[in-house]
Amino acid sequence: MGAVRNNKKKVLECIQNQGPINRAAIAKDVGISLPAVMSITNELEAKKIIRSAGFVSEGVGKHPELLEIRSDYFYYIGVDVGRLHLRGTVVGQDGREITKYTTETNHGENPEQCIEDICSVIQYVVEKAAIDNGNIVGVCVAMPGLIELGSGKVIFSPNFGWKNVPLQDILNKKLSPYKVIVRNANRAQARFELRPGAEYANKKVTVFCIGLGYGIGSATIINGNMYYGASGTSGEIGHITVMPNGPICTCGNTGCLEALSSGAAIEKQGKNIARMNPDSMLCHIVDNHLEKIDAKAVFRAAALNDVECVQIIDNAAKYIGIALAAAINILDPDIIYVCGGLTKNGSDFLEKIKKYTRARQMKFAGRHVKIIQGSQDDYNVAKGATLMIQDEGNMFEKLSFLY
Image (cartoon, rainbow, N blue to C red; front, side, top):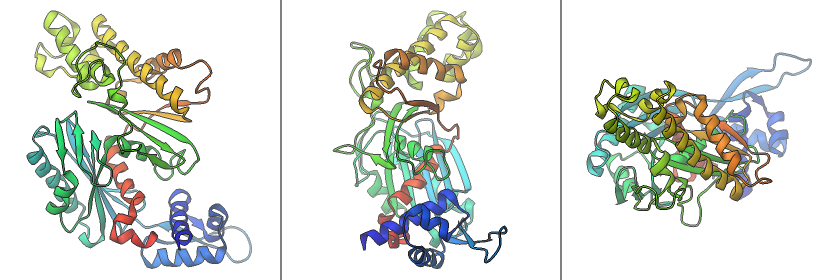
């Protein structure tokens, strides 16, 4: 029975990645018999997950039927709980975005109010999508920080200051009858990089994804499987020490990568410089309103050759490179995706990161690793969260037949 269910998932994934595709091609790709494929695809059609996309128009003889994923029956809701923005999306089975919504994160340090805001975002996108609630498979909320595996409890979120918040339980009570899971935001981001149709989707590769935003985190996917670690807390690259006796981090340690190279750290360093040098380019950019200084403003000033801001950005890239070199030496991944808001400030930053990474990694380690710019989509975390629902379909009634 286990093999049959596993084959169902493989057939569905094949159609997601390669459709429209005929049954014979599916059988060859998945490595099972044509009658088995016919039985599985008939069930997927009955469940309204796939449908006919017509017939092959070329060649002689009987033209085989093509199958594709439906987008108009099963829907998935993903929410990205960022320190600066809350983003929600509704996605169809084929990955097509039905609707999306962004609002500011106004109550990040207040768990009760932030949870109400999360619920409001979910309710809004459902109403805006105008879909049948009965066709919603489930909700995945992607949150930065340490998330307890299975329970979805926020053990600790440095970006928000939350400790031991049973977020998944609370959301399931508030949003019933929707089924809700809570997962780490960096894992959702990494999952989006391997979305159906992406270059390395369903390939036997080791992928390391680093998210550079208000905070810094990472995720590892090995041969299509998310790596969680023994207690589910892997990926905290933002909290490795890169400068002993460096600045205090929100996690309580000192010299963490996040305390030196994150968006929050760059903003803090920029404000310190502006206070000491009111005639700087950075002050000019914000019309001397220091409260308006953020990481983006520091990048802008650096692009205009503000010497001190250039140094801030260069140092940030250097410490990220040190951390990535360590990841390469340990994991020897095939691909490193560099993602997050900081990567939207021009290609020079990524090139600096690559330079410092290559300088720091062991000479003969990671010789084949590719360092790649990740998706620039503002909704990559929210969309990745919808894919995590499908990955964990055994937890959702509408997908239980696959398991």
